[in-house]
Length: 251
Image (cartoon, rainbow, N blue to C red; front, side, top):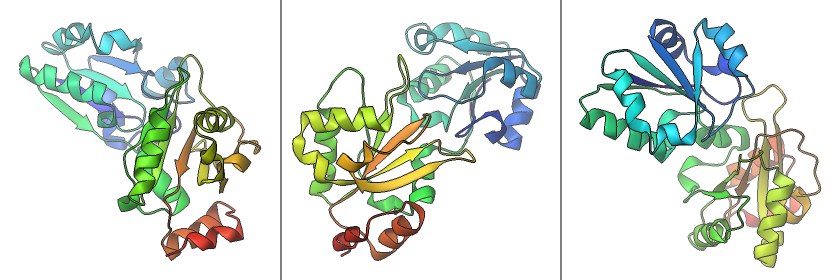
């Protein structure tokens, strides 16, 4: 069997009890930090789980995925994934390939940044549109996604690139504004270190967010819709220090 275990948002301790038990019982344990990251190192994770853990590269999950599947034909193999395992299409493809190869699969879900942003900001889950990634390789895709979402009055979750190093909110905002100057006047929420004891959530115009010191990554951004529900505004004012003028968006 191949079991996908979600590690949650911040460190190894965020894993569920069911996930922890599954790792302890596995024959082989692997982890990937391509789609997301934790602050825990491999050594710290091995000490926490009491198991040898092998880090995989992107190629091990994609063009060489058959090798992992072959291991799972005769052993109980666990793949540890930061966040929730099935948010990344890479893992969905791997699961599909495994099942078609006769390998049973199992998913043990973990906390995801997709749901965490709603808890941290008070924004309503049903008001989010398509998400996008602000990449080091400059692309207009995130700006196009933001504009498309705002045209239907939806929020946009923007992931920030992790490779070769985690991008900061300041770097992401500069890139977004450089591609579309009108972006500087939209309201957004910067979120740093979700799941940690020192998370930071700030709401303001994008132009202002780039001047705020959010501290160490991991960072994400939510670009707000054209309007807000009154409860969304109240939560942003309480939890994200939103400026009073944001109340103009309440509809």
